Length: 132
Image 1 (spheres, rainbow, N blue to C red):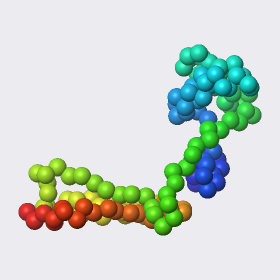
Image 2: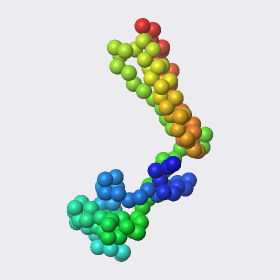
Image 3: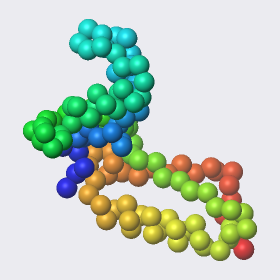
């Protein structure tokens, strides 16, 4: 089950919670341009209090507000990029290959949609395999 309440090709809707969304919420609420529909907040504490009034609570459990999140996008035919770095002391021992196999098993064990269903790796042609 997705952590998002709803999703489209470009957006995710996620229940609004201070622990996750307060910084972005404050950035929006402290912008003078919000004045057309509410008074801008002047501090993060004021934004947090304003948010608390507009999220489900014991007195108003029916309240629903969502963070609107822009989904990452990829050009058609591309996918999520995968890469790694390894301390030179451990080169040539097969650890990077083993770690990548573990990661790929983990990655593909989860349901993926759209471009998330594709992994892309860029390889530096000047980098030669290290033999230990």
